[in-house]
Image (cartoon, rainbow, N blue to C red):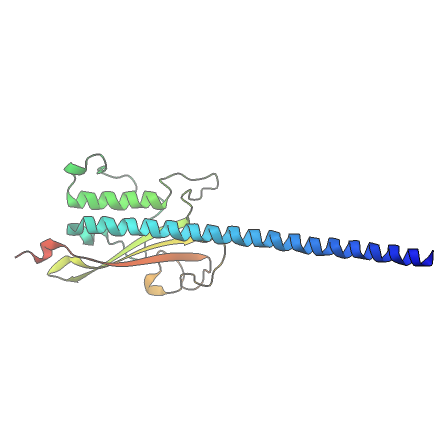
Length: 203
């Protein structure tokens, strides 16, 4: 009988150890799922930001005669309907828009893309998948003789759901009123390009 008691005691300990191991396993699995979901969301945000930035770079190249008109600078990023209403809708009247009107339309339409086409959720956050998105265009002409040919930098900035180690920390490429290095949740993508306007080099 004493031997049976010891055997039952060992069986109870084995059950408790098994439950403990399974519990730790489930906790680890839940943590892994959470990390995977967070990583997937961050990857989606970066892909979306790159897509939106590339759209603007393409728009500038297609309307190179007005490349300088796309310059917004770094201090005031586009976003949150800062441009207000557009004067002319070049999507439906593309043939009747001048290059200057097309540039204004491109900037307005790009801001709508940053804002999620003007649709906000109940928390007044961007429905585009980019939280507090801002967009900046920095155009640097080659010189007075070629005002619409030069380097262009397109920046899309947003707030990540989690803090990162590669947040916006460089002052000369930080889009919007973000204190350099003070916001670990602020992420951004930067696309650099070069625009050549044939009209600048016409004889």
